[in-house]
Length: 262
Image (cartoon, rainbow, N blue to C red; front, side, top):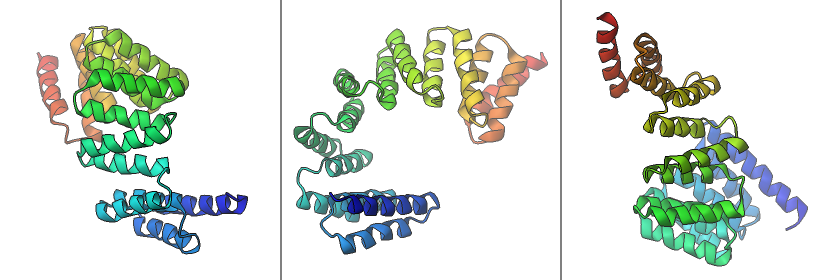
C-alpha cells in the first residue's frame, strides 16, 4: 500500500474514532462511507465500518460490511475476527468459533484470534481448552495484558489460586496501573483468606481510581471480614455514594450499622 493511502486510512479512522467518543456514531460511519467512495475495494475500511455499525446494534448492516471485506480479500484476518466477535457478543458461539478458526487457518500467529477463541471456550464451559488458547496467545506475545488477566481468571474458576495470582502479577508487571488486574488479584487473595494482601490490592485499585465503586465495595468486604467495622462502614458509604443501586453493598452497610451501634 502506498504511503499516501495509509495516511488517508489513518485520517479517516482517527476522525471516526473522535466522532464515536462524542457519541456521534452516524458521523463515524459516514467517515468510512466517504473513504469507500474513493477506495471502494478497501477491505480495512469495510471492516471498520462494520465495527462501528455493530456498536449501534445494526447487526445486518455490520455483517454485510464484514462479508464485503471478505469478498474483496478472503484472507483478511481482521474481518474474520470482527465477524467472530459479533457472533460471540450475540451468543452465537459456534459461528464465532468458526470465524476464529478461519482466521487462525490464515494466520496462526494472530494473538487476537487465539485470545478471542479462548473466550468462546470459556462461554462453553470448556476451561482447559480456553487455558490452552490463552497460553498460545501469550506464547506469541508475552506482553499481552488481557491474555494474562483472563488466563488468571480461568485458573481462578478452577480454584487454582496460586496460578491465578501469578498471571495477575505478570499482567501488572507489564501494566502496573491496570485496575482490573489488581482487583482480580485482590479477589484471589480474599478467596484464600489472605485478607491483608487482598486489602493491599484493593487499596491500590482505589489509589489508581478513587471513584471505583467496586473498589470501595471490595475494600469494605475485606475490612468486614477482619472485624474493622467502622472503616468497612465508611467504605460502604463511599461505594454507595458512587453507585447507589448496588443492593449487596447496601445490605452489608445495614449490617455494619448494626454492628457499629452495638
